[in-house]
Length: 395
Image (cartoon, rainbow, N blue to C red; front, side, top):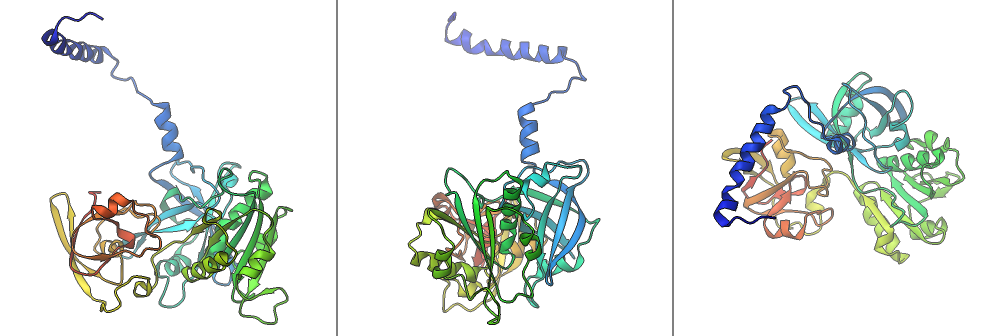
């Protein structure tokens, strides 16, 4: 390489820029640049996928399974058993999102004439489950949505998990295990899966018919009924004794269900001295009663505060209840803020608290240490304790 001297070499960059501009001018105006790597990345991880409901099926007296196919020329991205989809929902004047475990098998989204994925939604009890109630009562075949998938780390990884898997499920937490069971039956997931599914009554067991139809000697499905003494099968709760009965050798435990079940099952697994590396847990949504969360100020009276929302140089002042996370207050006010897991794990709704005090429940707190140090929280799991000022991304 020839060295002409500092000034000549530095000033020589202008000749390079000039030559580059001349080459650009000489190019065809109709030429289209394509980046195959980016094309593949967008297909595997699209920002948004347009989908249409093609089928709605009752899978228990209180739950329905919804089948979605890609719409508007989009392609369904691949996913793994146990991952979830986040669906945008317009309910009245409120635009919100909700995560749902995908209950269909991955192979069904990449084979056949009409690739699809499915979710199962349970109707909420009166006064609870606002979005699930709306979904259950209103969504029908032909409806279209924008969806975001796949997300989540709740899937089998052979480098980390043992070949024997015991799934501990309750309520809608059965859905990811139905996906696993179907993938095993198809021959594209090689594990031994035992599902212990806790229910109150035999009259409302989600996906029971579908799970019993799975034909594979590697899949066992056992109902555990807590509210029917006459039931001729496993009764009670998912206790350490029951879990041990159906565990064989080195086992990984996947747990999915309501928060109360998590607390109970974690205690039972502790009794069996199961190492943490052999326990996988998945939970969606904020606690129904944040005041009952460990560490919540016991002498604090719930109230509504002013929330100052900064987006660039714009400031909006809205109301925020101490009983609801920032994400809900933003949605009520019509302020856009990305949410995906709604459990404090994924970080899509990350924002910075510039002023004020907040409570973040330790359970599900997915923040990095640096985020905690510099005042960043996840809007879906941060509750105001005073008047606050937060900064969110401009969308």
